[in-house]
Length: 372
Image (tube, rainbow, N blue to C red; front, side):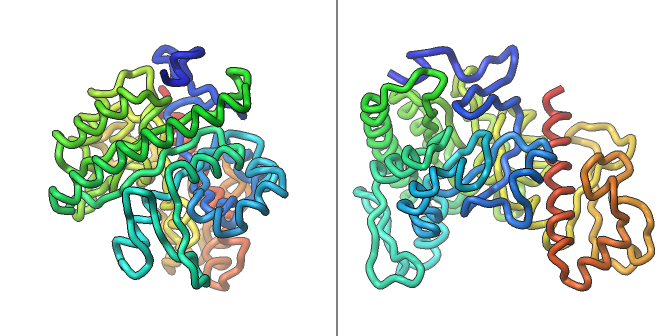
């Protein structure tokens, strides 16, 4: 029996909200990546000012730095980071994919779990489905994510089949451990964290169906899109996203893991996906690519409503206008594009903060438009 069978659903189609122990999410929602417990260049007050609703942190990285015992000593992720709102903890399946599949010397994926060598250490570590749930639970996360075996869309069919088999088996073990921890805590319904599973299958709709149906039978509070969500040509896997939404009941939220380009967020939201996370908007900001809405452009998947300001461009040297006239962020309300260009050229840390604030506020404005 899933948590959703035991108390009120966390998502209702009428209100498009997701109720969590540390707050309510209004969907669709973009979640910045705070991989190591921080969104780079900004603090929790900046995030609040940008109207960010929640962040995503990463178990795979946090267990190495600062380390699980340190996180617990500092009072859990919320207290450690000064962030009082919801936190989703990704399990690390994608990081294992990036680390191990790119270089098998870094470790290996087995049916027991992920074997890897932490950076700077001689001994290898085994991260099991049970261990990742124990860690996420101890960190105080609002949404925990099952460990999964991540793949690339172009991986061979045999690799995708193995990924689906292992992902289902790991999800079953994660659910069992999650239920055992809940029984020991005896938490009231409003303080109960949620558990999401991840749907694998690559570009095979048959495998996506097989994985989805098996995970639905186990019973989870929500589901994430597993595997690399973009083709080798940079296109969103729209057919797979639409197909999964058809299979998963609409009262269960869907998380488009790793989807953060504004156009892809809009497209996936139009297909019924509600949660999005990616480091792209904040990384783009730090590297000088800033997002702006095209004035008066129709907001639909066919129109060109998105534009970029490449801040290092010489044409911005003497610009005394904000990045975007309609933006209400700290950056646009107080500083000119010319000043941002200057900060970028002298490599001052103030640029990273102001640029990140702007792109984050763009993303929250984007999801507000998507909410209707």
